[in-house]
Structure formats: structure tokens, C-alpha cells
Image (tube, rainbow, N blue to C red; front, side, top):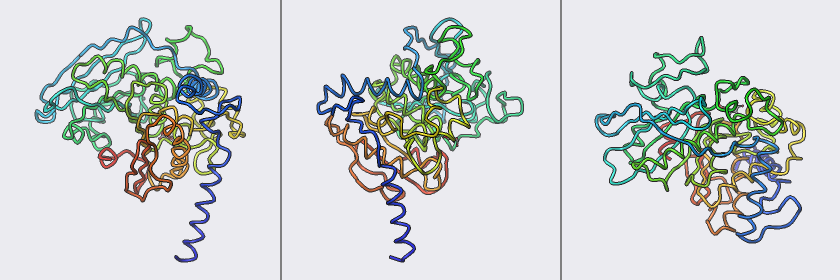
Length: 393
Ligand code: GCU
């Protein structure tokens, strides 16, 4: 090994060790009591962690509504040259006038029974995922257009990001909706669900639901609907999401036990990487740039993330015993790939306690190699993005 390589290796080990240092132990209660049984985890520690994450970071998720309904607005039984059925479903819930989730659902026609499904939010609207002139355009605020309205010309611009046809060919259904259906990604949340779920015109309190929690809550409403669809296998609902929407995916997976598999991609700070991390985005940076993502209380930790009574290892642990896969990219240092691996390593003890296996390796797997185990890790070459190759993994 060359000298430079050896120095680099030592530096990486030091950074990794620093990140692992002083992490709150998912198996130690706030009062210092150690969790040693499955019952203690389920009855005491898991509810305690859910409470702490909502109070200090994400804000409280609104209660689940009991009036979720899906109205199929369009069906194309011959999508992808007859290989799939495409449905556009308006999912409604909550008090009258609450915005609806406009779900795009594609299902393989060759299925022998109910299909396993991936559910995830997209960044710009369902119309970006397919070059289909019939797909409904969002009518709410969207980012990156001149007047913040969705445009016909953006149809199909994210075909490769979602690679729907590949999933269809592998026998999976995919359900997706525009994140702005639930919460626009900006400080003015009026077009989203938040104002409808608290007292009208009330200013959000210090622990009120913020954008990431609202998105996670929206994913659960999509799950409510999918569980009523006879073409979907309700025991095989996987949640996916990239980046900020990956943060929402892992929160949804942590809070909603009906989700069978959780796959956040490059979710980074506020999702899959440590708040105490020394690489990439910090708590202060994320709160300064995206104040609406987290509750007001989280800002108190800008300069002292080490005072948080949890770290993101505990969020990963909340997914236990269900499978969880963190996907990273080598050049995406902002999302701290090494720190993400450390979070899984630390959540492993909870998976073991629940008899669910865990992370089968103590070292980060080689680039391009999916690790084995209920807790999975994958890092590929390249940048911050979601690709056809990621979907294959
Ligand atoms: C920014 C932000 C990240 C986020 C990313 C994204 O880079 O700092 O936290 O994950 O945007 O959502 O693309």
C-alpha cells in the first residue's frame, strides 16, 4: 500500500470513529435504563423514540384520518405496449377541501396475483415520469418553471429516473405522486395539507408537523389506499424516495409498520446520516437553507447536535424488524455515505434483539456491491441522483 493510501485509510477510519462516538444508544431509554427484551422495545423504547423524534425534530404527525377514499379517474389497460395497466387515482382524506393525492399507479399485466408495489413521491409531477399526453398535470405550485406551474413540455423528462418499465418487467407495481400534492416545498405551506389538519390559520407551534413529517404522513395515506386495491399485495408495500423525499420515506417507514421494506436513496442529513456527523451537510446548514423541513425546536440544535437525545441511528432502529436499505453514491459526500453506514451499524443491535438478522458486515461493502442482511447498504460510483441502476438494486 502506498503511503498516501495508508494516510487516507487512517483518516477515513478516524472520521468514521468520530462519527460513531457519543451516539445515543437505541437500546438505552432516556432515563438510562437498558432495553433487554423485545417487549421493552415494543412497549417502551419504540414509543419513546417516536415521541422524541416528533418533539425535537420532525414535528408531530397528524392522526391518521378514517375517511381515505380513492377515485379512479383514468385507466389505461394497455400501457407499455400492453404490458401494464396504468391508473390515475385521486386519493381524498381529512376535512372537506383538504388537497388530494393524485396517485399514478402502474401494474404489470402478467401478474399471477396481487403485485408487490413500490410507493414513493416524485419531485415535479407524475407527468415527468412518462411521455404520456394524458397524465394529469399538477395544478399546485411546482419548482423550476418560470411561473411555478407544471408544463406539457416536461412530460417524460424523468423517464430514466423512475424506470417504470423495468419494474413492470420484473413484476412490480409502482405507485407515485407529486410531493407538492401533500406539501409544497417552501415556507408557504398554504397549498398543502398542513393548514387543513390544524386549526385554520393557526401559526405552526414549536413541535407542529413540518414538511418532512407531512410528506411522510402523505406516504401513509397512499399506503391506506393501496391496501384497499385488490391488485396490490398489501403485505408487500415498499417505500422509496430520493434525497429530501428519501428523508420522508425513512420517516414513513419508521412510523408506519404496514410498510414492509424501506429504501431511502442518498437521503443524508435529517434522514439517514448522523446529525452529529462531521462530513457533508450539518444540522445548522439544513435548518438555515430549508427551515420549513423540520419543526422550530430542531433549530435549537444548530450548534449543539450532540445534545439531541437521539441520532439517526435511532430512526433506522424504528424500522426494525423490517428490511431497510440505504443507497448512496461515492461523489455524494454532502449526504455522508460513511455516516449512513454507521447509522445502520448502530441500529443492528435492535434488529438482533428482535431476532430479525441485521447488517451482515462490519465494513462498508465495496463500491457497486449490495451488502447482505435485513439491514442493507449499497454505494455506487457517481453523483447525487436516482437511476435505472439504483432501481435494479
Ligand atoms: C439539498 C439538501 C439535502 C437534500 C437535497 C435534495 O442538497 O441540502 O438535504 O437531500 O437538497 O433533496 O436534493
